Image (cartoon, rainbow, N blue to C red; front, side):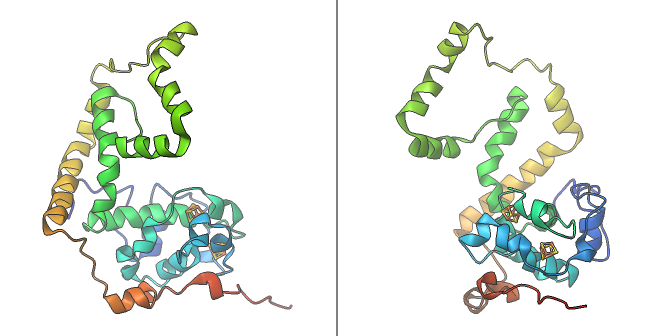
Length: 236
Ligand code: SF4
Ligand code: SF4
């Protein structure tokens, strides 16, 4: 078990649904129990458009208290655009439920390798008291946005000074950010995550508990929502 599991983040409850509802990440009005499996969340989800990812099915697994969902790569496909949150007719929020599931998975050491990209953000935050885009992300942005953007980045200091703006150096936080990270156990948690990622790197594989057969069939019983026509209309 990972050190410093946050009881507000992933409260220890009897069911996945209870943990999701009690987590500080989800709103008190969360309509998880009111989900009618209409599929509006999946229909509005950009990630679902390009993969077999299905927020509707994730919600279903949570309501069925099916813990295999924690080991599913599905929970890592969401990129927090909140379209599902806005579209749900029952005030449910698959996006915040996914956030809770990810933390639960990490607590079990599942999917920690997904955090490798983000470790740099924590390190930078601890040192400078501000966030940053990781180097890999910057390289991708340079590729996507091209020379003009690179030029703006290179000349940012002189451009700011021409506009009479101050330096972007945030480094004088008097150790406040470090103190917060220290007292919340961030550094211990980060150390544990780094060890776990390194272990996975050494072994040269990402350990999952699902078989090739499961993957082919839509892992853990996830089936593509592309064939899902939605909830039948109820005539009253
Ligand atoms: S849109 Fe809301 S009610 Fe419909 S399946 Fe998704 S979570 Fe359930
Ligand atoms: S927040 Fe996540 S699950 Fe919801 S629509 Fe966006 S990508 Fe899909």
